[in-house]
Length: 308
Image (spheres, rainbow, N blue to C red):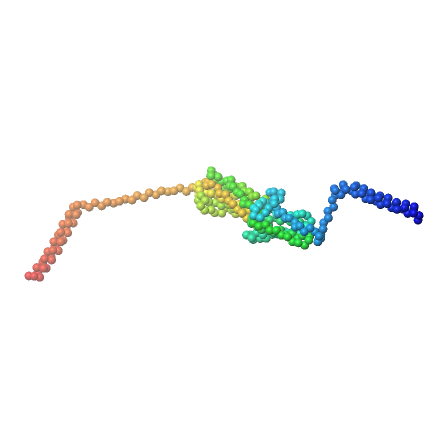
């Protein structure tokens, strides 16, 4: 190959290299918008070079009343219908598995749940009652570390006392025969089945007897036929949701159809006064004197005979 030919070949190679560099640069410029709009996410599993920074935990709750998670801390009081605890670790990509445990020593019960992600939730209604709890959240990291956080003295209220109000009878009621005892009741817990017990008092509420138990309807047909009519009757209705209960008591009212009349007996006491006749007294005195004189005469006679 001549010197001229070798120089020409070198020149061609330089031009080719420049062309390749220009082409690569042009390709990069054209691809930049696509890369910016579609970033590539890389997840490292069991990578020993993973960041040593510990993830941060956020514990929050939500319920049927408020579906927006609200952060909580130790010592708080939370309540709602079906309270759900939500534990979330951040940033993403550090946590492999996580678990949550809720311990209520007063019941006592411990409930738990696990997840293969960096978040986990649990419905605390399965505690079965309101309670002050400790909440333990644990995370297993991709780098093999295990971290845990505990929240103490967290009061969780899922259950509420039902409310009841008697409609009839009222203080103006005068009942005979068959009448309906009626009431209205409500519970903040949706889905709770309420049951009712009905009681009757005939002494203005000092004592009660059971009329009916475990009713699911909000009325009771009461027959007061044969009862003594008076104005001291009272009705009490108790409602229960299976955990909590409350009651309402009516005012005194009149009921019954048996009227009892009272009979007054007057007792007359007669007093007999005996009057003594003065003549009878004199006669008795004379008779006593004669008897005494006779006795004295007999005594004198016997004494005289003894000494003569």
